[in-house]
Structure formats: structure tokens, C-alpha cells
Image 1 (cartoon, rainbow, N blue to C red):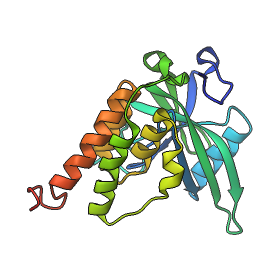
Image 2 (image 1 turned 135 degrees about the horizontal axis):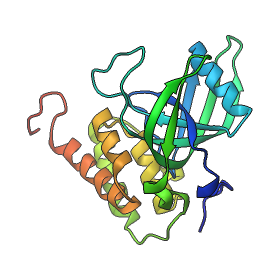
Image 3 (image 1 turned 180 degrees about the vertical axis):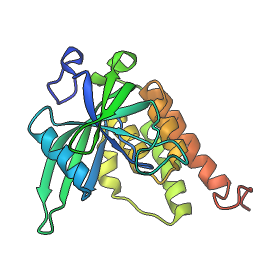
Image 4 (image 1 turned 90 degrees about the horizontal axis):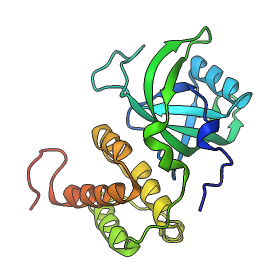
Length: 217
């Protein structure tokens, strides 16, 4: 089974515009809505729309300089699958995950954003949706308990119809994990690894208090 985007690994570009954003996770089978308002990133989106429609989401390193932060070396490319413009000049877009990448080097262009030379080799398997035998309900039970503990709610019907790869990556992208935890999910090699990590993070979030680091009673 292949992904809905008709992009082959060999057709992926060797240069990719970067959107550094802490706490924002995109995965190959997930989606990420974004509200774009900063001029350099408005430039980036408009340029991407005139080209490959691909954007590289990557997290800055913790404590990095905000203007030109050092970045994690692994990110995920997303294709702009929808966009609209607001009356005040913002762009509302949705990225559909395509494949993860490693940054080889990066540079800034005249229009203010950064472009990376990237390598896709480690993540060629991201371009294929695999048939995976994992228990969906077991994962959802952990997620339900976690969300109840966090006093959050989701649209369960929309989750329950997803196949395992989309479900795992959608949960990983949307649950309120820390930036460090999200980077761990991004770098997990395959969907099975992300399945077990999402489940473990949910169970950890129920058993321990994120504010104090002590076990909740």
C-alpha cells in the first residue's frame, strides 16, 4: 500500500525550506495545521506553493537562540495539502506528512527563511504505508486514560476509523507531549516503535505528575 501523495523517494528534493518550531510534530502518516503570520515564513509558504509544496518541519534545540536557532538534525517534510488566507494577511495551512529527513547543512536565503541540504536515505521506508498487526484498542485505551487524566477530549469517531499507521502518527502529533518527547517520537525508526512509545508516554503521564516529577497518588 502506498501513500496518497504521488511522490517517489527518488523525486524528493535535495534542498528543503525549513520551518523551525518547538513542540510542533509532523510524522509521515500525520497532518499538522499551522497559522503562518511571520513575514519570512509567509515568504516561505508562498515560494513552496509555487514549487514542490514541501516544507521541512524541525525543532530547535532546547535553549537555542530564537532568531537563528540551532536545530535538531532530523525533521519531517510535509506537503501543503490545504491553505487559505485571512483578511489580516495570515496563511492557514495544513501539512500532510511525507517523509523524515536528516539535515546535512543549511543556509539562509534572501527572503529570510532557511533552506537545508537534506538526506532522505535513512527514512526511505516512510514513503510506504505498511500492513501492521498491532492492537488498535489497546493503544486507544491508554490514550483514553491519559486524556481523562489531562482533562482533555478528542473526537473519538474520527480516530477509531484510522488504520494503525495513521492512528499512531496522528496521536503522536496531536497529544500534548513535551518537545523532547516529540523529538523522540520523530526519531523512532518505524511505526511499531512509535506505537509502543505513544502508549508508554500515555501510561507514564497517568502515573507521574508532569509538574513535580513525582509519582501521583
